[in-house]
Length: 196
Length: 437
Image (tube, rainbow over all chains, first blue to last red):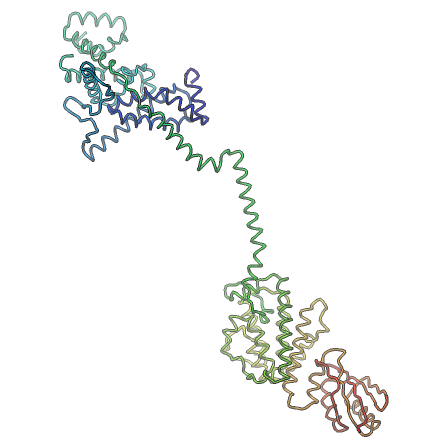
């Protein structure tokens, strides 16, 4: 943990310094929201997940021994909370039926119901957004184990070691899952876009 | 290499994580296989699309919301735990000490209040002359009054007993004066305490006893045997016994069995109200009662008791006085002589003063002197005053009646000084013989 740039803030947080933890929140919230968003495909859901993840992290910060980087440890929490959130959403869907707030499952994968960043757009920007929405819908349609490695490697840029640490799986498994995930995503994108 | 094997490694080839050997083999294959080259191109486009995804910005309120939730949790935690226990090294010893202190104070207060509480529970009108001799052990069968009264500490019991005795003595004196005035007590029926009240008496023996004593006073045939019982009860009570009804009953049985030796009552239920029963038994056997009275004489003598047993002494004196009252009551109709005898007893300083008016003082004096000698009087002294002869002597109490009878034949007898009590041993007599005009 000595090489962790968050070391001091983590130590202060462990002593009950809420403001220090606030600094950590501010520093990591963007990455965590993006991970959650790519995992869920739901911006509001991602924000809820990140809040819960930070609260869990604060409660458990005294148990953080520094075996890994704080960011890695925080990512693991966000991924786990996201998975739980997805499970709950699936159960809720089975009980109550589909909601207009939840992305619909289609033949081409899940369709976005909630654009993530509705900035004022011109025609080009609109087209770009649409492409990104389709890519996200393809990611959403992947299995969770493919999705998580893809998000962590190709979107967030974690190393194989870090991904292995976050997901608590060996490096070889990370690689094999990642290659399969890319292959699956390529097939989905070809279906959505036709010729890539 | 086959296309399938090549396609499995294309992703790693794109990343550049394959060995140089594999890189060369894959490159050779791709140059000769358009389909695998197409797959590689699609993979590269996919990677571009994924990496081209824009990052979303977190909402501005996210941090604030997270921190609000964290602070709320922290406050709740502080409210419950920290206020109670933190810092542990300071608060836990203080709390432990406070707990021990509270426990000690509670125990101390309980012990301090316990006798007071029992005193509060004790009877307000329970002189409890009965219970004395009996040993009470548990409060289950006792009335709350009895429980409280009997559970008192010895000191308190002694105090209470002495108070009760004083008040009772006052009552007796009051009753005595009333009896002399209008004989209200003699109007009470002899069977003033019916046997069916035994149960009530059993329930509240402490309250019944004094009542029994008072009611027993005017009884014709109640003699020293009863008063001896009462005296014994008081005496035993004075010992500060704190016991229960079981023992009361057992002691009552014991007394009952004693009574049954003189007059057996077959099938009679054991009762704590033995005074009632005792009365009946005594009535039937006056001669035994007299014997009992004789055997208990020492108890009745206040002077013979040790000085430290003040309350008992007083009680015994009281009982003796009650006996005197009885004698007076039963002999009320027999004339002055007995009345004088009945009242001329008790205190050492009290002499029976008699004035007799005769025609011939000297002759009468000789006759009286002889009479006293015949009656067995001791310490006969004769003094001559102006126109008066004074003879003083000590005479047995039972002979006083005879003396008065015979004095009546000698001259006109008048009472001069009568003490308020009667002793049942030698009594001092002072006879003034004066000339009648």
